[in-house]
Length: 213
Image 1 (tube, rainbow, N blue to C red):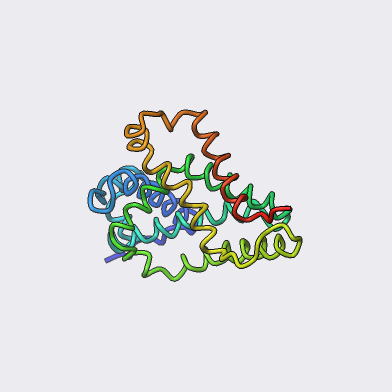
Image 2 (image 1 turned 90 degrees about the horizontal axis):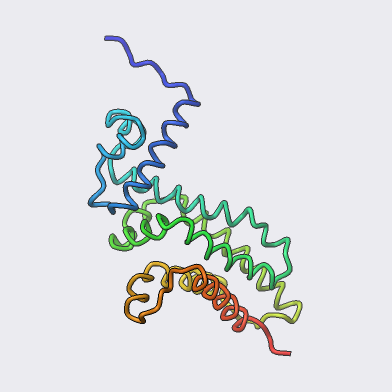
């Protein structure tokens, strides 16, 4: 019986990327339980056999999606080169980036919601996600130290707590936008409301960090 031909490396990378992109859409739209391998294969222009060639099962594929999702946002944050900026501008840039990224990538929020329903059981198996996120916290810590040394920022700020607060200010507003808009009878999704929200976040975080002069 003849052995299957080896797939060229470039084609492997392209096919894997197409499967990951399709899986990201499927999982973000339907959650882990509702996502179907058949649909992912069809979306990617592949087939189930090929999909299982790259990922052994649905759980492994979802983990790969989550790892890719975290790596993508961390890479985009790294491209900001925050350490090249004045501490205050670096914080402004991080807040604006987080807000814009969440707005442009609602699938990121949907995937996080899904994984939290599983108590992070998939990403607990990852050897990479912690590494992606630790770099950001190290960068933020350096910004805080610089700001403190320049007598701009208060001391004793935990960079992890600060980042969680920045992310939460965007995350809660966007993931609960429909209910908030309905309950408070105010359209919080229109462009004007979103501009006001971003400025409010910047004012809130810098108001906490900045020393009064």
